[in-house]
Image 1 (cartoon, rainbow, N blue to C red):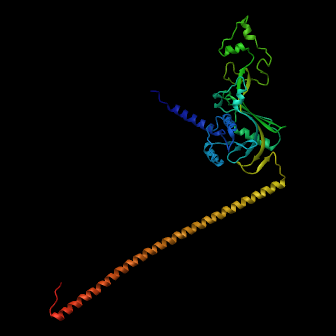
Image 2: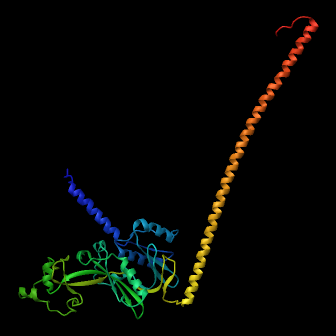
Length: 397
């Protein structure tokens, strides 16, 4: 038998579970699904986006034809889901909607180009994609989103809130295995979405030393001295040294997983694209959850007078809707009153019927008593007739 847990161990376990629940509940969660017919390729793109959003997404979310958007909103509340990524397809384009729950806004994108994970991996000689990378959320990097414009700032805020925030003073570098790059091109007004696998390797040492650190014995048959193993390949050009340079070499503040990645040592950060890859074009931004005022539209522009007219028509529709609702409530109340009156009348009618039935029974009893009296009078006449005829008293029978 194993040792039973002490009180301190139980308290520590309860406290750890409580901290884990708070941490898990404080990060954003997402639903990635589609609406309508999208085809096989777009469906694979949707599943690839679920891989990007792991682990804080519904990996096995099932979508049925009869489901409406309200069903997903209803299910999202108890599960703590904060964002929707909805894929749709028309005859001319593939669309992506990013929605913030519960009250919006909703950002509409057109997916002009996309590449699936399987296509990106097949184009690489060596890919770095394994299941351990998806146990933690990716690191988000935004590029060129500091420009002027309400729609650009809103897009940046939307992308930032889709992924958990990182505290640079408490983050564990070993949990960062992936990177998501979202880059905005101001010339074409397109957004490039990329997904990378992250690897950290030590620099300033030869390939032979790296093999020794990886517990692999190098081939020294062509070497004249052991120093050749340590010094050969140290001063290679950037192209020969896997293009490591100032752009990706940094000093590690922590010990990173991998041989030779020590604290305060120079290491190179290398990115390998694992997909999916998307090129997005902003179409419009809507104020609410799927409906509401249009905050920005890339194609249609309206003057202030047109906007006032639209708001006026919308206000009139809302008033008509409120008036119809008020009339419906009045009709329902009137029907309830009528129903209560009918129930009261039916009760009174049943009471009157019972009273009439009781009065009929009493009349029948009185009539029976009156019918017995003539029979007694007839018996007395017959006895008198017998006395006068026979001059004797009749028998009792």
